Length: 205
Ligand SMILES: [Ca+2]
Ligand SMILES: [Ca+2]
Image (cartoon, rainbow, N blue to C red; front, side, top):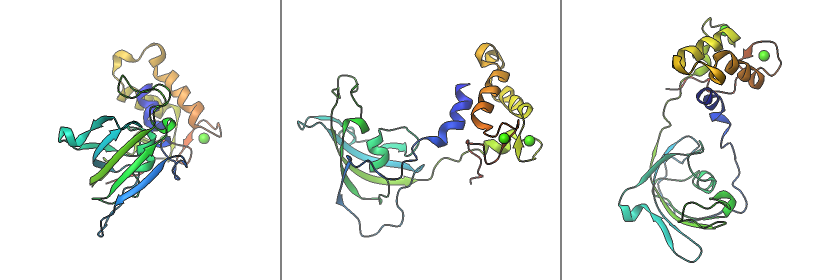
């Protein structure tokens, strides 16, 4: 169930257009040439140094001599990074001051980031890569190609995608299908239309 629901919900994450007003973004260096700027779903390769309010460094990719790569806009990094590294040019350097609620919050992180910490990052964007291709899940499920998903089609898809040995208990394809329909079949007509479907449905190269 988690796999399927995760597929359906992956596009609901990180749609925040405007950065949080408490996030401070300072452009330290902007290259004159800028052919491409970061957008959500891009693969970013960065160098960064993170420090705490007292100046104590907690992490640095420079010191490891190994840049860090991640996909932006899919919930893989803290919100301060998700919001603070968009619309950025290759070679651009930014300083981010990230309030706790866009960082590790009141929980902190291990013994490195204390609870309620404001985070200071010096960042440098080295590379922008394309998002990994996303399968058109709608098309994959719609086996009779009538642009709507029936319960049977969803059940078949789940049976095909899930290993047989987990098709029991709450992993039962019928139960999962019911949950998906509760969530996705917004007009309750027994079919998930293309418009209703919240998962990946666009063909991408
Ligand atoms: Ca269909
Ligand atoms: Ca419907």
